[in-house]
Image 1 (tube, chains in turn brown, red):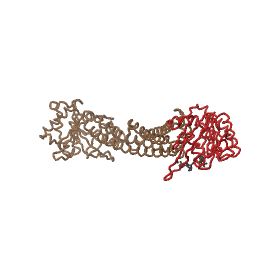
Image 2: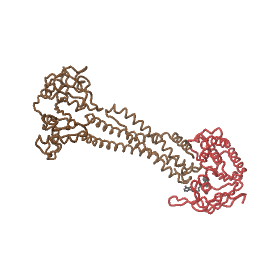
Image 3: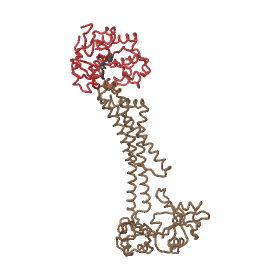
Image 4: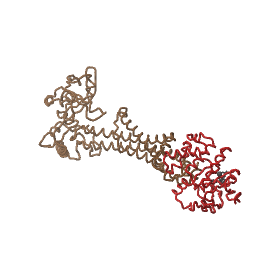
Length: 407
Length: 229
Ligand SMILES: Nc1ncnc2c1ncn2[C@@H]1O[C@H](COP(=O)(O)OP(=O)(O)OP(=O)(O)O)[C@@H](O)[C@H]1O
Ligand SMILES: [Mg+2]
């Protein structure tokens, strides 16, 4: 029997045993689409985090108070110890001492309640210098950012995050006034939403003021800051900048490296941490997906085994009429491949549709992975073909009468 | 007559069913010449079908030798056997063995598929074979839509369609009324006149009488031949 004939016979058998064909494909469809979607979810989460981190700027160092490992081996309260001060920021800004630094933005951060008439919104009140905008790689969607003069005079101005502006004002926020702890601040600008395709709104729910303004509004008199953002002169010298700042602060604080009361985090470290977390997530999801593929595969195996057993008489008859074991094997190979491929393709279509629809429903991005798609397709195909062809070619080795007599 | 097309010597067939072994054939010696018309008769369970399956290369003897057209069947490969079944033998099964999902003509064309005959020609020949057994208008019916006798005639048509040199028919008239029986037997007479070798199993002596020679099988052995010795 030649190949076109074999294909015709296979297609006919698929149509003739409609229920069986549907059940076989169902197992494959579920397996394939769940693998693609679960891996896609993990991949999507990973992509989202990396794009969020990218949006922060590529040659950024963040100095935060507290050490990651204290001498007792206990992780120091991250950001809780007020060991970083404005004078640390000023020292880092000194071009002679730290030549590889372009911009420095000390940041204070407190929770504050913003009031516009009867509308009340609690957000993070950030105090910083003019460099904040560049260092954080942010843009304005309306108005302007505060000036160096306004920082120097602790002018009562504020720049709102996009979400914050939306919560407090219905129309344009620029030129309006918000009251924070009794002090009136003029809204001079609104930030563009952060570049990350983020559902996490903390980047967009914020109010930024000059350092002095934030201090006076929140009533804090101290000079401690919650972090210092440092932009390196270039990406290549970021390592040098790290060393310089580290040495400078150790010296200023009068401690040695083992007692460091601050932590310098580079973007790279953040990405590494995020990636390793997400890799764990992806592996976990892939495991779940693998199990569903296995379950689908067992379903396919069962149906294939049963259907071949049912058809051993047919195999016997075909042999009696002149079929070689090879042509029997080819017939079942074509049948199983058609079922496997059709199921696989439908599974991929469902996964693609799911990837398009799902983000809107569960607020999670889904990235389709070619590797997962191809892997799932091949696995399901192999399962269908393996369990379809193996028992068939075994049956094809029986004598026609043995096969015809089997139940 | 012509050269021997079938030679059996000391053919045994035993089935192991649990503790007991059934000896369906106990040392059959036989010779069938090319172009011969032979009837095999014998009581139920005597081993007629078992013998026929071995002659059709559908089953293998437990011991003994079977030479088909001079060649020892036990030395043939699977592919050679498939070719013999396909090209040289037309087999009519006692239980018809039609594929339920296929129409009559598709069942009949099946041996031609494995013979590599082109599609258009297959259909033509299948319909012609069905017409010969009086089922021309039933070509598009599935076996389930046909009576037992009609199914039997479809099975006969399938055995004829490749125009094999040898036709092995296991009670081809078992389910037929006298009229259809006469039709099928006339067909066999015709084929015999064309020089085909025909081996026919039957219970009925008047059917057996039409054959040139009768072989009586009893308890897995050849009993004294009746008719032509
Ligand atoms: N697969 C098998 N396993 C065990 N015994 C078998 C098997 N096939 C046939 N037999 C036995 O072999 C003997 C011969 O069977 P066979 O079918 O050849 O009889 P038969 O002469 O064709 O009978 P009938 O006229 O009823 O068709 C019987 O006793 C039967 O029970
Ligand atoms: Mg019988």
